[in-house]
Length: 367
Image (tube, rainbow, N blue to C red; front, side, top):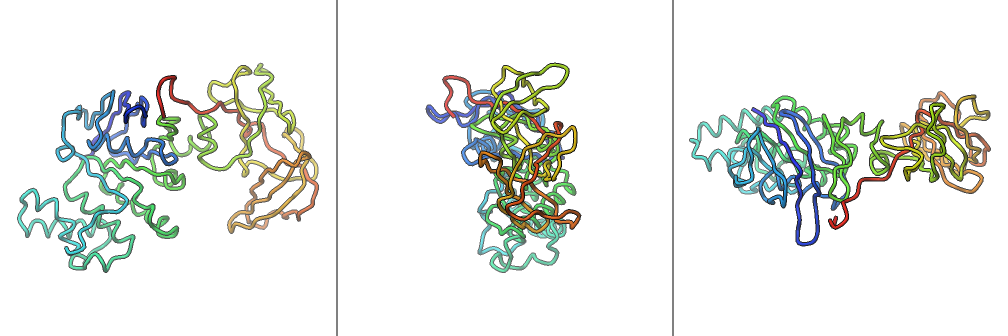
């Protein structure tokens, strides 16, 4: 059975430094939930508080509805998988998997049977007698997961477990982890700084910065409707314009910047009094000779074209020499303009989002 995890106003202080600031989130039983953010944002500290290795300075943590403040790490219904996996090199694979059962006094035949069952679950049938040194990086990851599942945790905690793998293997293991989580229905809480991992695997994502939760939502919402400028910048690429909202009347808001005056959409809590910036994703822009009516338009000159495989990044500059990026699909449908071409960069007001800056810790709290 999986268990939900509830963080209620949880903070973590290390001397004067506040690593996590009043985090509140309810993680559902059986959910694949990711904490996403840059190094030092507090995401690993949250994982260690859930596992019991760090005690919150304030707030409460409930797992499966139970307050775990006074429960030791080895008594919590959680298991933590570190980046280095910590497999035992002198034990065969099946003994690695069954180690937690041996500690609990389970007889050897039952341990071996459970290990073989879990090897089938993680798509490594027949690998029980192999040594750890005979396994690839991805296979070691699966053995670590099988070992964690052997003790039947309600919550699996994963601290950037794919960071040491090469790109192709990381992409493969994303699908493997998601499939294992679906088969077991154990609650997975995943820590990563890689937006691709978080978006590809998660039911929901919490984006963090400076110890604070900036947004908690589905991957689609995080990408398409970011809560603030930090989320928009950290998850995906953007063309960013500084300026101000001049009107938020019913006729539609207008954003004035050094690159032009644009009709825009306002993000959460943004009005003409809000310090904010305009964000436009490169894939929501295109280059044309003549701007169609109803679209925002910037005269630009093509500076460079970068072939990226399935898409093409077109670097352009406006009249002030400001660099902007247009992303075009490599589908053969349109002609890529050569460097030096004078064109119009256009984008829809619905895809021009004005966002406030990130949430920052309150005065007196370090981050």
